[in-house]
Length: 362
Image (cartoon, rainbow, N blue to C red; front, side, top):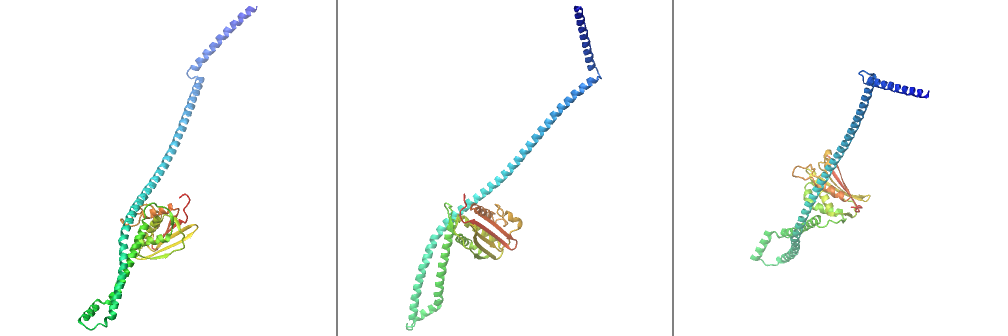
């Protein structure tokens, strides 16, 4: 009986396997059959997966593209910044080169001026000395003539006395005595002034190491006025209103160059005749020198450019546009400042401020 049951069980297993296989074959045919709902579902699932995968790829591509664009924008911004910095650097290099060129020109002019001053000083020295000697000789001769005149009335009448009286009348001895004395005195004064100008020129154009020293700004300003007096005397009355200034730690020749530029500009700003006023003072560890003129003034649109290299409102051939730029650089290197206040038709005032003591690190 158990053997029969086992055989029947095996037969049933075989039958069930056949049924399962048949059902599986049927299901497979059904899935592969056209129009099958399951087949359509499976296709939709596969398409959806492909769409999702493609969408993810596109999103990744878009993100990568956005990242590239952001990097490109940053790169472009960096390039623009570098371009701006290069332009600024080029402008600074050009300005430095121009100032260096101007400094070299000034140094060459200074050497030439110092040589000329040395050469002029020698002949002026002995001319001045000779005039002094001539003044003494003339005084002695005039005393001798006075002695002759004092006894002229005692000389008996004669043809010789008549000739002497005629010569005395013709030469106008009284006028000659006064005029010759004045001429010699004026000549001595003139040669003294020339010697002083030569000394001022030598000090102004002093060559060699440009060491800082304690300097009297008023003395430097007065020496500079002597050098540019011909530019001022026919254009303006010069008014000095100096305050009490201490000695200032600076490079005197460079500060005198600033004074010269400001004085010449003030004279050129006056069309016919006006006034140039110099003032000075001190406050808060600084000294200041102001140069005011009653000239034409500066147009408001030009005020922000006047310290730029090569900017000038003068006609072509009348100015290089470097004077104020060089002055600004000199004052800045001394730790000071230079400012301007101007009204058209009323005049301009430049104020130079300098520290009394040398700034730390300069």
